[in-house]
Image (cartoon, rainbow, N blue to C red):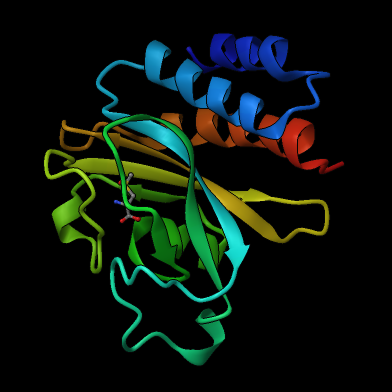
Length: 170
Ligand code: SME
């Protein structure tokens, strides 16, 4: 499944010098090819402190205030625009640099409920040329425990292609 998707991704974005177009096609590819996915897309790292206060910035540690995640290209229902660094599943993936596999979103402390129908989620961090987190790839499902280790592996390979073709990572 993922080897075919990842080949399609390469065919879609290799040599295309347009970041938003490439991320948009990547999100659409996942959304159209993977069953039981209600949301697929990107949040991108940006300097600054969240101003829209979605998820709240109260109690955020000082070190997390200078950056945030901002909604990027996606497929699915409208979503939260800003996510504080370290908050929710996406902010945790960004802060730790580790894939977050969440079989039950209600069991994840601080989960940000963009879509009330979402039951499980997987978030893979994206790294830039200097090893810094430049964003995350986020997939949601209305089915509990929709994603497993195989999805994590496939989506991490997908993320490596995005890092190289879109963010210039060697
Ligand atoms: N649930 C995510 C927020 C983003 S939406 O699912 C699209 C989180 O907790 O980070």
